Length: 346
Image (cartoon, rainbow, N blue to C red; front, top):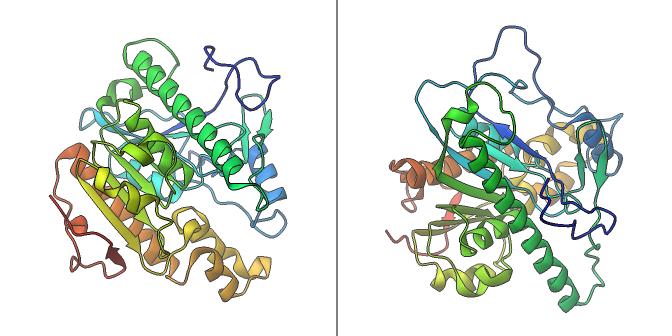
């Protein structure tokens, strides 16, 4: 709860509220049930209006437990923030989040209330989409005004998360599972996001938040970062479609380590969990292979997830741990699905 702000989307909410979730290396006790992909109330709403309807599709469970003690062997761990796409939710790219956690990162996923499709709060209260609809007939200048406002709201959400994390590490704030407080290394904090979440990562860095590197997964850029760029490491990792101009426009103003890479055979939602879930659910929902490819592209889904995980892990390993990342060194590194749209520098 950020008591310094009224909610910017719903006038009746005097305090800005949103949910975050921690994914971290932990020892699983025998017999512990795996946590759901989404909380029950949020899942019911998600399935009532989406591509994976209840009665036809059973949503997956995660590979995590709830409130397990953190694994403290190995010392303090880098922290990565995750911001979902517009209208999505904090578990929308969990196949990527879990992989990072399994390789020793603490990942903090953020639900941006009323920008997200649904957010479930303690006690079962579910808040659904509440910002103005971005309809096709909306004038471009009005759409840009709404999206730019949303971007600012999201950056303020991220700022509050970082403030709360600092309080937690200092011994105050929220209760965390045993051992987790002590492994958070906030001096090595990075961020990634899909779509508007990717734009949020760059805007947060531009605004001076203590984020050392950011990855944008197929997100058009808005706000001041789109005009002025940033001076920290940036990965632009996008779909197999022409750039809308925002990435090419910002490229000369990215003054740190930078890469502009696309994934052949992918589309915008390839960078979400629709990538693994839709192909498995296709028969149940009556979708043809062509219809599935129209949402996530023709690249085989297992390979797509594998490559995405390798790219993200390589980027964060390089920027947060000082490790080599040959997958981002340019063409010819064993991943023919990757197309480097700009020459590799540095």
